[in-house]
Amino acid sequence: MLRRDANLLERVQRRATKGVVGLRNKPYDERLKKLGLFTLSYRRLRGDLITAYKITNDQNHPNKGVLPLSRYRLPRGNPRRIAHQRARTRVRSHFFSLRVCRPWNSLPADVAMAPSLDAFKRRLDNHAAIQGLHPNGLSP
Image 1: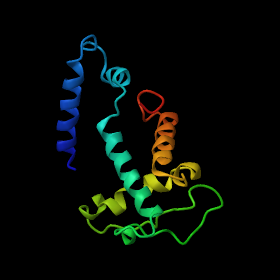
Image 2: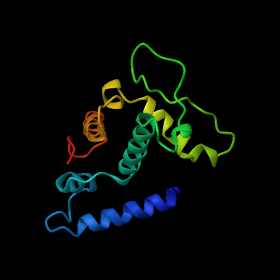
Image 3: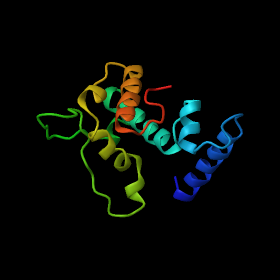
């Protein structure tokens, strides 16, 4: 998604949250917290990580080859690390397989190794709350 398009969408959400009675003069972060909403940038990242979870955990996923797992294992951290690929062009650097690599590999093992998709989403939101990415502390 282009940065200008992302900014336009974020402006729409900012305006929409101002329409809620009693929140007009509150800062954007506080309005999100009161409404239990995520920022659009976090929602995009969350969607990418959920897709990466589906691909890395389903042996029969049609896109299994898009995210090759790394052969190198570190003693701690995420055991399902994605192999880092290099992009030779700027356009390629925005592809899903390159965009999701760093955030996925930085997830703690208990999040990446969640037993189910729902557990992964819960753990991801709790991890984001600890990191300060989620506005209301815990998942809505």
